[in-house]
Length: 391
Image (cartoon, rainbow, N blue to C red):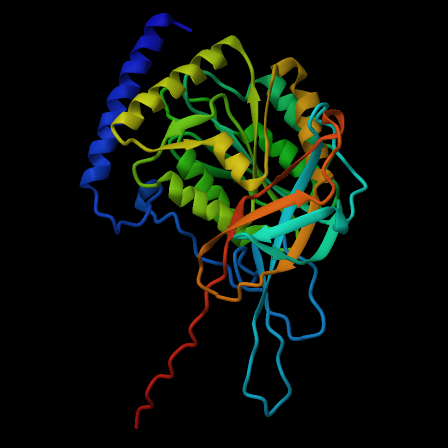
């Protein structure tokens, strides 16, 4: 990369940080996020499918449907005719990955009794438990902006190889982003459909930015309205950097809330090259300078940690093995479901802590549990008011 261009990039990023701070201070607080052509980024919710963060209705009090890959699942037991009481129960579902700390290998063959779960410090009872039994809903989110193109032919080949490991019941969608986010191929089954769509990814635009916050928001909203409500939800970003300034209309908090409500696990694939490391270092330094001016940034690694995902960084020539490792990790995750002892339907954020009941006695046997750090509680839906009759 031309050193002059790096200097220009650093200066422009610094100036952008100041501009972002100024624009944030002057913009009204109640403005809704906007996308391309001024369209609102908050999508219409498809009523034909349950919304990811919220209500899935069931009519039987004695049984539960299988856990949804989304954050909560509402189960409403309906009483006998003549009773005027209707109860609502929210099933919270989370994925967990258990790895050996020393080797990074997946720890299998764990049982429900091996886990201890708490919410806001209060112990919870795990009522649903399984491993590798739910289908995957995967959104591939490919970065097309910035100085370097992370989606080289080697990375494209690694992506194709990883998709071959998916099962027939899995579904994949393909999105690309820079300053804006485009849906290249929507959810559907059949690997050939996505393999063909990889050749329709827009070309790399060296002059464009990396709108992380907008990309995550669009991906989460699409996952909520189109993803399989009974599957495990994953957003995999392929990018050369891990930190970038928020879009003017979308904040990192907007994206974070949308990700949590969608019930998605965020993962990242970063092709490691000298140029990539230089660009990523410049962006991290610029983000630090921008923080002095209160400029907001989105961080891929932080989102992955909060949702229980992982960011894998490796050389492009061995990225096929790295990508396959990520798919294997997704396959061997545990699924746990519980009904919270906090029955308030207030839409609040609740912290989760998942631990193993039998800690390792030696460092060699120590296990690490990766899962989301919390979820958004369901909200109480007010019944519609009856309109006055006209005479």
